Image (cartoon, rainbow, N blue to C red):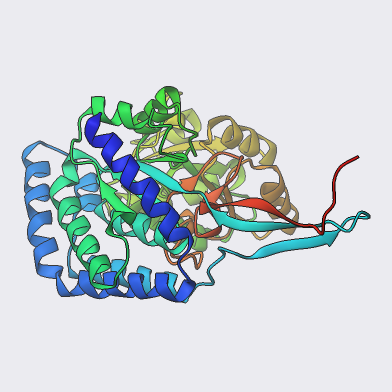
Length: 415
């Protein structure tokens, strides 16, 4: 706990310094970090290789190893994400409104940093860079606790970030990494109320529930993605097939990948054989209900649990429905409120889907894979919030801020 308290104290002090930095100063620090990542690419990849080899030795499945792996292109993307954040408007200090009261008090609402943000996440070392960059741009200090699978990658990345900040005359305690990856230390971090203003978990269902259930620090819940694609009876089936394959197979180990296919009965006999053939080219395991199994006889039988499962792997569940009402009910009963998509040429059904599906991101005729800060033009994201208070969907700069009221007077006293 001593180490956590020290990191918390340093982060709190750094947050006061960060809150006073100008946008140009923050951009200077971010630029230094982006350049340093590219200059130290070889060192990052070498550290990452140790993590990848350890993961493979421990039998971690391929989709999760893919999330862990860094190469030249991914490091370049990390640096490009920072460059995009540099180009974005800085929300800090913006006065949202100002009005004068009858007693001549001028009252306004101003955007300010949250303060110190804690993030607990799993085997995604790119999150280390995204989290730092977004927090730094918004004047927040951040304390990171990554998973043991990525510890060598994270240590190297944090070392590079801190050195770059020092070179740019910025506070290096703007970011810190908890090196102890034990559950006990994670639990202690969840109760660091004295220093943390908010805690954000980013990872699988187990991690997120552990944080929600154990944290005494306010939590923004993120990430679990049991995402559906509904192929309506008025869908362009070729488009539907292409979207499905992309959403399921491009990167199956991420939270915005499709995990469940819902098909209208009127097109199921035509669509399911072509969809299953396309998915099996990527070795996707398919489980389905009785109707789906009748149409494609070698589909495995799905359990009720399958329809609620985020596989993060080459596996998908299939449900055949008789109408859009059944589709809406099935999705709303099983959704994790992340991302859902309808494929249809019907304006009426598209509007119903957009209005009635309860999720952070709802699509018409597009892959769920676009639910991402980079794709939404945020430069990066801190996570994808699946709750409704404070933030929802990809969390960019504005989602890492809060507000305060500023009041100008000229001697007023309250009677």
